Amino acid sequence: MARVVNLPGLGKWFRLAACLGAMAFLAIPSMQAVAGVDLPKLEHGKGDKCVDDEDYIRRHHPDLLKHHRDETMRKGIRTTKYSLKKCVECHAGSKTGSVASSRQDFCVACHSYAGVKLDCWDCHATKPGKPPVKQAVQPAQPVVSPLMPSNGGSQ
Image (cartoon, rainbow, N blue to C red; front, side):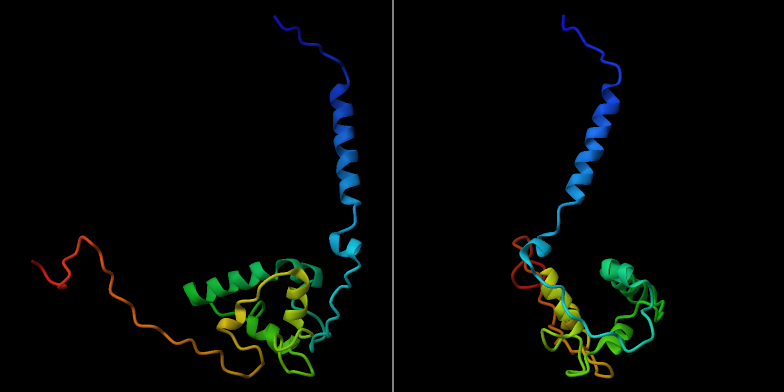
């Protein structure tokens, strides 16, 4: 039979070692800092301040925009606090008048730095006051199943 050795105080040392390891891991600089990559230089928004804390918005804007989209599209609730249209109106660049026309524009600069693909502009306008991009609606193709008769009717 195996004998279990009970060493008093070992749990405390294990927790201390785990805490020290976690602190050492968090002290390691990010890959961008190690590589010497500069943070994107962004033009300041046109308003006095952002709709929420800037660090919070940087971190959570995808979730906020998706939630706003769902509230608007699925429930019909329209608000302006986290609206993509308001973001575009405030952050459109002074040179291009857009948030996504050049690599220096607000959205493209950050998303290029982070390596994140932007698909918002497949449907939404990148410039304030411009209509959104019209997507051609394709007619639905009939579903063909090997179990259905090929003439479309009953046999």
